[in-house]
Length: 246
Ligand code: BTN
Image (cartoon, rainbow, N blue to C red):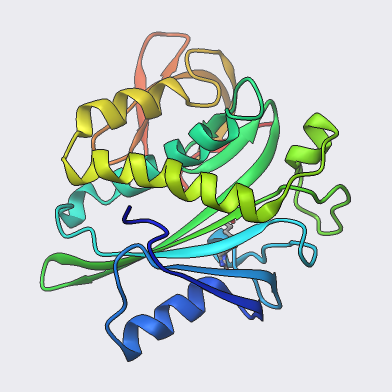
């Protein structure tokens, strides 16, 4: 086992991603080390947002990885790998989940988990990767203005043991990470594409030209999204160039 070979637990932290980056700067940490906490005072989300999580209710952790086999141009494969590991875990408990491109984990139209990946690239190689995961397990009320949070408990009505969830999730992430190590990009991309939220379904989107209807048809090797318009033409988007209308 690589992911979860070492687990560092702290009752509370400002942010597990920030703590993991400090460890990386200060010593030789082992690949796969997990930094796990019950509460983050300044949990970080994508695009500078805060990540809300009630004390002790959910999974909040970061993984230290050294994905030297991934060239920087292919760093999106890490997002695919992690998204799939989380879906594999969730599908132990619920019938299906999906990945809202690029890496929000959804159940129906609601977000159950977020991923914040911070890669360090030096001299043209991927030196290390801090993979932060926030997965809503037992929280039932959300206070922030995040539009559509959901948790396993809201969906199933059951309370879960977060410790058991962490070890199962680490094992599911580890299996997917081994597919990445063996450079099984074709399988990872095929599985990732099949899990895409709104794949092949006409839905509303917004880009720099305004609202439009289209359907997601694929993702490129470097993670760009292909959306087909009703006219049959296909547009390609990078992160932040397109917004889903929910
Ligand atoms: C998102 O905005 O969707 C990404 C959320 C990522 C949250 C996790 S919680 C553990 C780790 N530490 C952080 O500060 N953020 C990530």
